Length: 291
Ligand SMILES: [Zn+2]
Image (cartoon, rainbow, N blue to C red; front, side, top):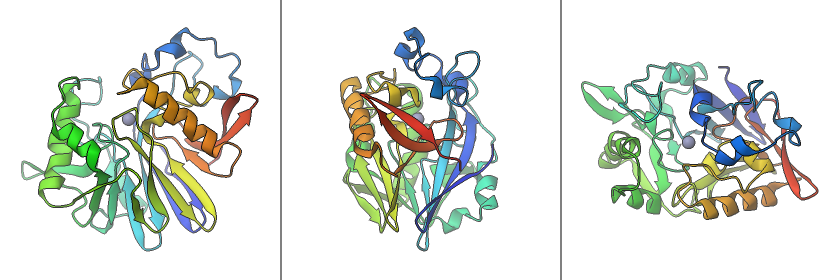
């Protein structure tokens, strides 16, 4: 998949794709499967394909702002043992080559940000070198919600094995290497980049707000897995930790940014991935922006 690129003032946001998540989205939003979406024609064909399937991706984002090179939510990662989703085990993708292609060398990355600590958002924190999981971005500060970290550190029994595995082989190695900053859910990372709390999909889920030269963008994380949840914020994802809290975080985010120039960048949205939220009566929709 192509690199996508958006300009936000003097900042640049790049999309680095890892894999097609369309098969994994099947059944993820149960109310979608039951609903008539003929009133949401804008979802086709980019976000809902001809067969009526939700389309989606696993992808990371790079923010180039000031002198900083920032990676957000780096995917599933290579060679990780994962069992929950067919096709996501023992990956061998060209993710790092794609980073190199946009002149982002692993040792030049200043910050790695997490919207949350699910295994499809922390994968490239580490890579296998000499038989051990070592930091992929050795000069970076890995910045994540401290409360989210403590939740996963407590080994919650309700979570599936892959989530625990992701914490163990992606998050803990960078934590033990002293590279992690555990921060508040509204933390300011650097000039023009901050977290905004959007809890519910995970206990301390955050989104990333980028501002430069009077322009704004939000990397949403999994506030909404799919744009159908812009039209229907009440539709929960099966993997939402607290569905009611996730619903209100979704609705609040659309309310806050509707009819503004803020670019909404969806972490699992299929191409074109980003757009602006428009209010139509009591409803919302996404007006895609080409990258
Ligand atoms: Zn995700």
